[in-house]
Image (cartoon, rainbow, N blue to C red):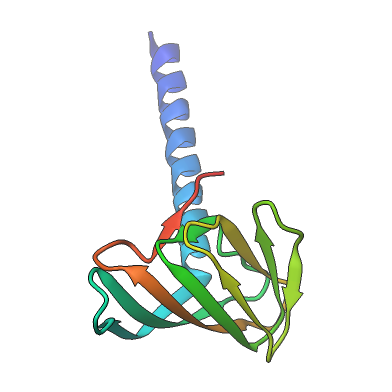
Length: 139
């Protein structure tokens, strides 16, 4: 019986350790991309739509993870180099001064190609009002 208790204690300790490291890893991933909403306003004369202006900061080497937006996205790279991978399209690398657009619900992922420099993107959305602006897609 004492041997069983030792084994249970070891399994519990291992589980707690793995859980803690997993939590730290997920927290680091979430902190690697920040989105700051600069403006959110109803579109005049358009029922159920809003305009949203966002600055996204992507840490060196980080990825946004696969996601989609509830509305049309227009993005302009302010700083850094961003590799954009959209489902069904060839990957493109965008540098400062370049812009792209994504149709609503287009699954895509942005990757900072630098290990040392952040990426800063200005994004504008024409979105469905009262819907999440960004929806993560599980791998």
